[in-house]
Every structure is written in structure tokens, then in C-alpha cells.
Image (cartoon, rainbow, N blue to C red; front, side):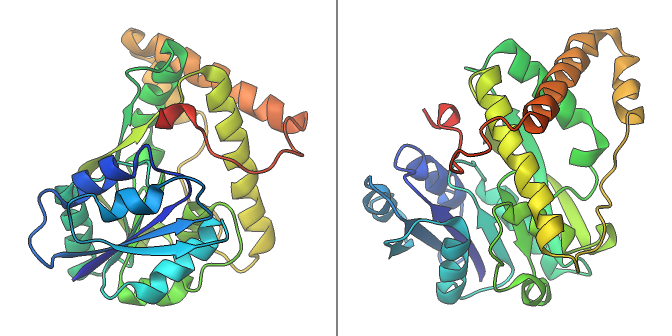
Length: 276
């Protein structure tokens, strides 16, 4: 049995979509789904219970993703184990592919292929993500953007989750590229509506990723494909010039905002525009 842990803080608007996509094609008893409603002020828990599929719902009075992940781990029964953000759409077929990839080994962690969904986002945001999705970093043992899975052996390496904001960065960095696998099956990630919302989210993610390296010195070095060469490769195609330009512009805006300390004192929050 494959377990799926879904941490959810005030996700009433999207939790039904998440669970229906995950469970619509599942066989009886195939997926053990645990929704951890943490610090909710809405009816996330009630909507999860009434989604029409067998789901275990755990309610925590205190909000916090790490606490929710660890609470879900205490209830989940099976391996491989998938961790899924509530705003992500992971079809049954992709969950099944993640489980199969880890069951057959030798990989200890697995990710799926991101498919950005930005029908209601600004052109600048859509173009940025079109370039991002074509880069090697998202097609070479990619793990993150709200979806990752581990085997029982991989789980022993990451559990319990440490007190970091960027849990997906922590998990990715816990495994070298040869220990990770990416399945071609997709998942949907819903994009911010505006460039300002994207920059705010990306600045928070950038700071969270940096904090992982600073707080957990024993992690292996980051082995993701980096540098300008892949982007220059995209720029050889004139049909992608607008996408490359948007990627460069928004990436520069994120770095500048981070350097200037934009919203450094604000509480960590998530992008609400992608959940509307």
C-alpha cells in the first residue's frame, strides 16, 4: 500500500480538487491518504472528509507544515510514501508511477514532471514558467514543487522532518542525483496570477532554500544543473525569445528583491492567487 501525506492549512478552496484527482482512478486499498489539517480557520477538514473517497483526516490546532508532515507520518501506514501539497493536482496514474519507480529500486526518492497551469496568470508569469519547465533542472531527477516520494529506506534518511520551511529542498538535498528518479508522468502546479505574486513567492522560496543549507550542514552539496548554458540553449529558438526574456526579467527581480530585504520581516505565507 502506498501512503500519501497531504499537509493542509486553510486549503478549503483546493483540497477537494487535490483529493479527487489523486483518488479518482485508484483501486480499493491502493492509496492510504492522510490529510493533516493544521491551524485551519476554514472547513478544510470537513471538505476532506466529504470528498467522496476514504481519507484519514488529522486535525492539529497549531499551524506549521513540518509539524503536519511529522503528524501525517505517525498515522500513515504504507510505503512508498508520497508527500503532496494540497494545491497540487497529482493524478492517480502519476502517484502509481512514483510508487512503482521506488518499489523497483534502486532509487530512494522520486519526483514527477511539473506541468505549469497558468490560464489565468499574466503573460509574463506564463512565459517565465514555460522557460523554466524546459530547463534541465526540471527534467533531470527533479524533485519538488509540492510533490515528492520516498521509499522506506529513503524515509529513514529524512524522518523526522527538521524544522525548516523548504521541506522539498531538504528532501532533494538529502539524496544525490543517482539516488533520485523522475517519472515522466505529470502533475499540475497552479501558477501565481501576477508578476508581483510570483516575485513574493519566489523570494520566500529562495530564502527558505538558503536556510536549509545553513541549518543542515551535513547535507550533500546541491547537484542540480545550474548556469546560463541551458537558458542560452533555449534562446537559440526565436520562438522562445519572449519566454527567455520573461525568465531573465523575473529571476533578476527576485534576486534584487531578496538582496534589498523585501518582505524580510513578513511572516512566511503562501501565494493565495493560485488558490482562487
